[in-house]
Length: 64
Image 1 (tube, one colour):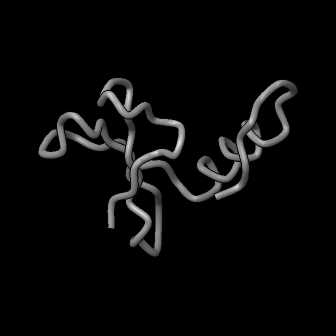
Image 2 (cartoon, rainbow, N blue to C red):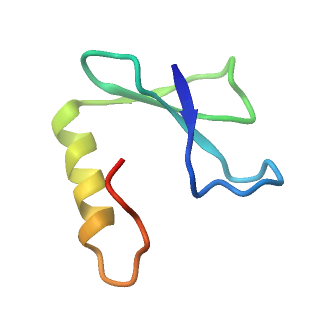
Image 3 (spheres, rainbow, N blue to C red):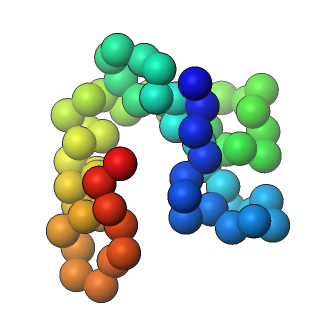
């Protein structure tokens, strides 16, 4: 199931979606082009990305 970022604006610009229904890897795509390509990040790379957002000073990110 594709899920849009909670930080995406309501105007449709700069939106990304992730597919939360996969058992391995995390696909990421541009929500404005749902039939286009998706980047697939390995589980360790995605966890490191999220950890970087959560621990970076001055961010409002919360662990999904």
